[in-house]
Image 1 (cartoon, rainbow, N blue to C red):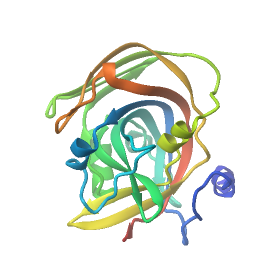
Image 2 (image 1 turned 120 degrees about the horizontal axis):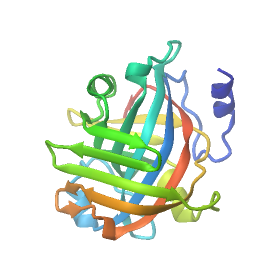
Image 3 (image 1 turned 45 degrees about the vertical axis):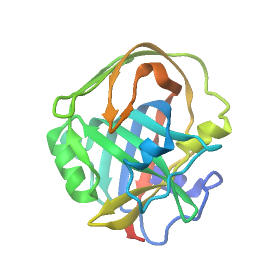
Image 4 (image 1 turned 135 degrees about the vertical axis):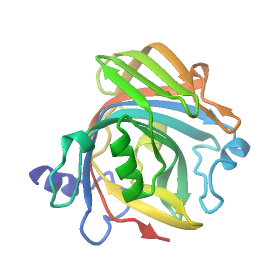
Length: 240
């Protein structure tokens, strides 16, 4: 609980006030790999519901793949259950700005464990699905046979924490996520301490993620980062 009190007290970096009411879930996003691509607006627009306004950085639009290990996810006042609460996850996201609240929209989410994916999808409404994911020291692999999505990374951490650029902050410091259900728009607010990121050397990368006409190939990555992770609290979804 002391960790959560400290997280909720660290607000300098937060772009808007904490939501009213009690947080509902705690989770940790650990050993995080960020890969970022610039993408054309007209192709990205086809993938995102019209109710959501695509956010841009200096008129450039981005998609990011985030591969990490989810740990200790649990509802408020209940313990985490490791067989369900701990799993590897990959999400592919883009960036939204609705009413001045900059957040993310998930184009795809994959989880290592079937039961974790099922429960997360049921409780959150987010598009979780099962993939075969393995993680070892400085390597991360995933296969989603149904969609023909594949990811193989061998990497090396390549230096101390970086002084983040404005683009780095724009890509990482997002404190809500958007969801469309039955043509209604919802927002989940979240909070965590500011991301600390460091350089990453991609020693080997084999990537197949086709989203509409967007091909997330290794040759087109414009930025890659690593983070030890953040501890996160989230609130109930709010209909907008």
